[in-house]
Image: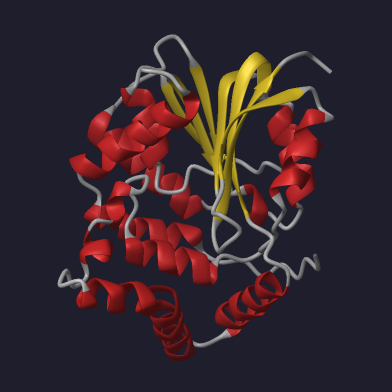
Length: 271
């Protein structure tokens, strides 16, 4: 992928997301971690959140008992994560938050290894996805878990979305809002029509937080704006980590459609 230094401001979107964050969303985030990691809690585990974003999943991991280290490339995302720590775990020495870059060797070499390395929807936005995946793999302890999600490769459709994302980030505020409106209609129009025909208008939109505790509107902004943007087929991710000594323990695909495939790998030996 061409790296033209064009980047979406994820932190600005996450700052707005904090205004709708509530206990129900936090509980859903906890459920997501427990389900995918197949654990009832994270007591005595060390947890690394690469690209912490809003800080929601760092908070969920800490509430489940983990010792958490969070970092993000975006200063506003770091500020969001710090705000959640202030609200829920102020002055807690078992949750450390810093600014960092998964592509920075000095940063990566300073981190050590963790029982759980988590990076949901982040590494495909670095501009060097395969390097980022490689760096994330090295941060997992032998026997530890790597929980990642990567955008599904849809061929021509993915190329079209790449163009839309670049256009969005190059545009004025007015044009961005028009692009968001068009994409919202494209992404949510069919579902909304089905809900109306079933006599349950907007029920899917209202219940969307059941999916990882996220907000539908903030996810739309994240999706449309998210650039750099790279994709991979599930088998490409599987082969990449198998060759690095990882075993796939959990897989959740988007059924070949739009969105992320989720993977949990176990590190079975040290390279």
